[in-house]
View 1 (tube, rainbow, N blue to C red):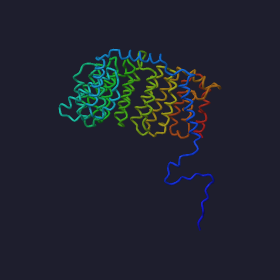
View 2 (view 1 turned 135 degrees about the vertical axis):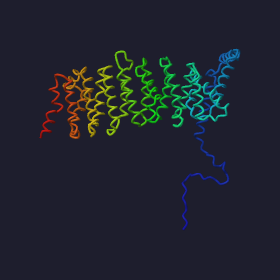
View 3 (view 1 turned 120 degrees about the vertical axis):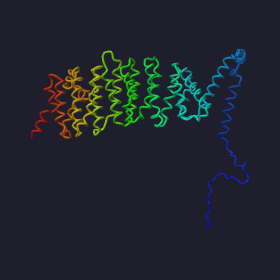
Length: 447
């Protein structure tokens, strides 16, 4: 059965074979567009308005063109710019090793030190190519070490050390192990000679180079005279006159600790202990820098089952807290709640050495850091209008948390810390003891 499709009335149908017929008959919008264009044209060229460009404007334009063309061109400057750009492109195209990709960001720099880096890199690359080399990492390492040993100018040494620190990160461990004695001798000699240099760029690069070697060394190497001498040089930066050198030293030492090796971690912690212990009235270690080092050391907190690293870490954190308190007693007390929070899990350990070390550290910190601000602590705890998020309240909550049931096996250690805390607060211990709950704990144990 056929069904007829009804078409809407007044609907236009396109005839086959006559594409031109499909053009619309109604041109309402086209006519409006043409009308608007005519109005714009009449406004810009009509008699009622002045022309957009007058004869005076054209004369001024012609005079400016004549003035610009009459200026003499400085051929020397143009040649210099062209020579500099050509030289840069030539230097950049000489080396093909991808480990120098970071150098490319300095390509457009106008600093003399950055230009020296490109010059040294171009010279070293040319020597390697002339000797038939393949521009491998080992070849660059050998050439840069030779340049570092034979140079005496500070600019050349700085540029060479910067390139060398990039190369060392790409060398295999076997090369770093084999070349450590000779390379460390050169690097430590330069560190001694330029330890008091005004520019820290050379010292920073040399420390990074030494760090790259020390990270991969095996445990047996750390007892050799070469390694001991390297660490003696590092220890010299713990009491350096410039805080920025101390910061560079601390950053490199923390990177060495990234290697999960007990001996390496313990030795690095001993160096930090020496750094914090060297603080005196004439010390250049600021409270801000010491706080930054302590905050980073929290990231290296050992596991409760690692006895030696845990004891060393606790000792360093204790000395760091005392150091910061000597520099600023208020900042020293503010840092106690995080320290207590980090140390409380050690009371869950079953190792007697960890328990006794944790107790000793917390008691010592309380005795050294609390007395200078004891009056402020007591007034904050006893005040009814004080915010309970103050460092005094946070520390009190940390002490109270040690009296929970899960710490019952370590209460004989924790109570020693509680007694020390109440003792250093002075006359108001009787009022504060009610908050700590000593009577309830003793009553619970007796029952």
